[in-house]
Each structure stands twice: as structure tokens, then as C-alpha cells.
Amino acid sequence: MILFGGATGDTGKYSITGEVFSCDLILRRWRRFTPSGVGPSSRAAHCTVAIENNTKLVIFGGAVGGINNIGMNRKQNK
Image (cartoon, rainbow, N blue to C red; front, side, top):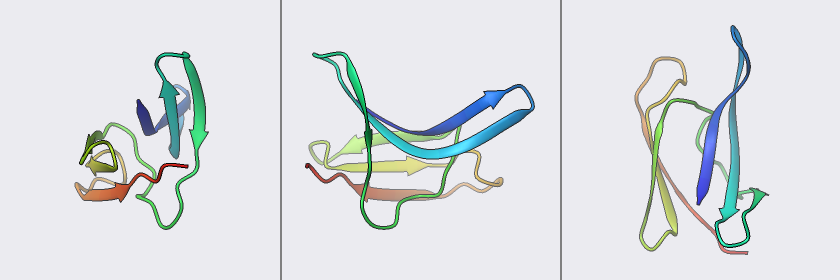
């Protein structure tokens, strides 16, 4: 499972993040994933889906200044 972005903080003091984490569902462990290259802008309240055998993430919309955009990033196995 891959988790991208989101909001952290207390009510009224949110910080939007572009962090990426992966979760091993068998071992029940999270690890921070550091993609290479230029990634999408930080965002929250968006939709993300993995495609092409989980090698690409498609990210749409979210709280990034009131715009709806779409981005695709290739997941590198390391």
C-alpha cells in the first residue's frame, strides 16, 4: 500500500505534505519512501490510484490552491 500526501496538524493549523509512505501489509510496517526526480506538488483531499502493475501512481485534484490537476509518477523498486 502506498500513501501520498495529506494534511497534518491541529484544527486551523494544517500543513499539507507531499510525503510518500509504503506499508508492508504482511509485516505491518510502514517506511518512508523517497522518490527520485520531480514529484507532484504537496496536497490533501486528493485521489490516487496505482496502475500498470503498481509501477505508476496517478494523482488527481486535492487541496493545492483550488486547482484540479492530474499527475503521474513512476514507482521505482529499490
